[in-house]
Length: 386
Image 1 (cartoon, rainbow, N blue to C red):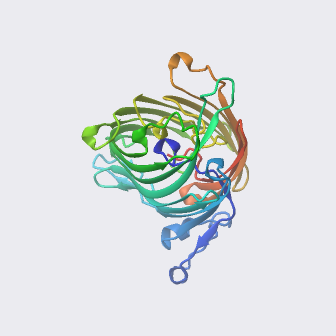
Image 2 (cartoon, rainbow, N blue to C red; image 1 turned 90 degrees about the vertical axis):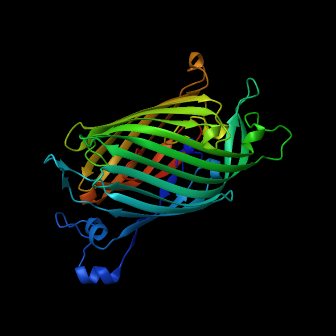
Image 3 (tube, rainbow, N blue to C red; image 1 turned 45 degrees about the vertical axis):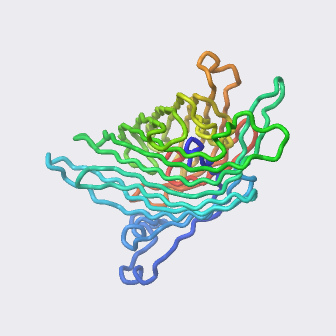
């Protein structure tokens, strides 16, 4: 989950792919984990016919969470066949994704939760639902000392979160729009220090966020997991107000553009541009932040954030690919001081394996370097999975 949703971006290193098998169903249907085309290890038929799921055990190296920890993320996929609409046009249906997460880290942070992304086929509605609870020890930063490095403050969050989004597809199913809602209840324990965090207000200690919003998107990618071509454009907003049961009056607007293009048969280029703007007085933990591989969660925040990132994927041998990427970003409070601070950068490399050909699902590991340190990620589908 992104730091703009208050929970930290979890930086992960892949240990191993674990396959959870159903021996009875597999025996009856003679399901193979070898692909019928190239004979390579592939989970497509297992996921489709045996109602299988992938269990991803991971190591968490996020500095804001103590630098070490573990998580288990079971992910279920359900594939849908294309349907023919009333106008006679074929409509492709994205797979349903259902999963959970359980994590514990070296600084005694823990979280449990679940999520689902699916399609109501007949009414043409795309929906997302997620909920969770966490007891998280997170680091936030402030520069209240001239000519000195940013000061780190370690805070404890006990938070309950619920989020849902429902988008109605237009006649052209690549376009969709609809409402979204976020509920967040948090209790913050401050560090026992002489100088309290300057960005924490008294009402932040125990607060409720209730935000109603909307989104409109165009999704022309060839698949939702690891696209080879196509673009996805989205604009969305959230409104927080007392009449919604929120302790804050604020607005947040997000713009996102993600695109992929095959430069050659085996070389795929990608570009991501995202911006976020906050209005009013949101709590410090909901201020726009920088979401880049290699950048610690909540390290850079402001009322505005701008992120750009480019990547290349080289499918060099059968199902194996090598990644290279880099990005620039900035977070600031006032537009006339947008680049008063140095622009934040990150770069890195990684690999992918085509784990489920019929879903075009690749998984792998990324290693990234930011201004402060190295970080490691597990990647399910794409790092830009939205």
